[in-house]
Image 1 (cartoon, rainbow, N blue to C red):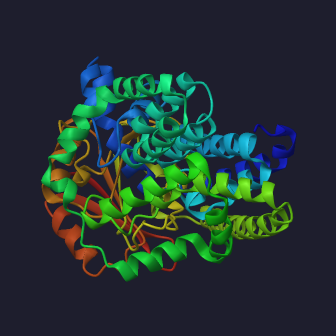
Image 2 (image 1 turned 135 degrees about the vertical axis):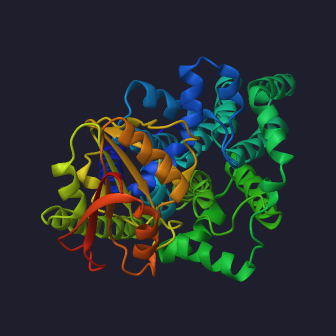
Length: 472
């Protein structure tokens, strides 16, 4: 049953605020690294190779998100547009769930920790969650809208397609006999263009090469992701699961366990768990309809976790603002670089990014609302991380990496020198990385350089800026 959308307005405002905070916090070097995955699709679009678009999978990720990202890369390569696309998909999930299951269900989706952590990421999980929400709200609708939603889910993520398949099974089992064959046929036709890429993926040994799962560790990660509020809400979810939500939940759960145990999915990856959120929200909406007093519990728990999440992100934003008031190595390099120069940012990966809590203020010197087109300073494979995913920004070529690879660095530097440019190497947040300065010195040893220490970083040392302008 559709609900009155006016009651959703405060929830949507709250959800939008939390997602905007995420966009601010998550503008860092990792965002540029993740954006590199869409470069082959960008190239295929620019060269008019549609078949390459259809067949391009990255891990368990079908091409739809990559194609949309590639379109933005060609038309408006602005980081906040890539991140905003995910935030919009996440917000639309809140809306459609609330429109059909009530504002309590919408509040659960708006504050679900795993959805918030991924809300502004350059990946397809927010889109996949939105697609599953569409599948659920069309499960009892006209078969055309239902088929379109299922195909959308399949093109968004492999596991989202599996969850949608669970809802298809429910529809075929309970729906009109005359529409069963038609639904199956049109779903198959809609998914056929990406079937080849999926089969090729299944045949690759690397698809099944994720580390063996430690069941205890995986269980603890799930509990940590759900949080205390989620554990309290869990019985309500189980009790409220009905019809298509229950079928999709069960099929998705079995598929995820199978994928993890077979090595196709990594047990440490939290975003998979976010695909269960639309099903859980529908269950909570149903539970609140049956027992209205549960609304108070849902609101209290969701507001508490949402506010806690928002306060943490505000704290991170204040840290970024404070750092922007101090001079860093990148400030010195940008102030002294001239058009045609290269600025190569180097910072070690000090923590894993699985929980999406890593942050960096350095990249905020490059405003995420300014254009940053894919850079091609030399002929190379853009996804080769050794080249630092170069971007053109205000006449400069900006690279970002965790180390300097001698071969890739020489390739870029010598091409830049041939064009009359200089190369600035900015090392920051590096003190805990033992031996990193020595390794960089060895890579830069063949070149004439001037080095300067600039400011202080986040308590991890003093930034080093080296300007290279030719061979020794």
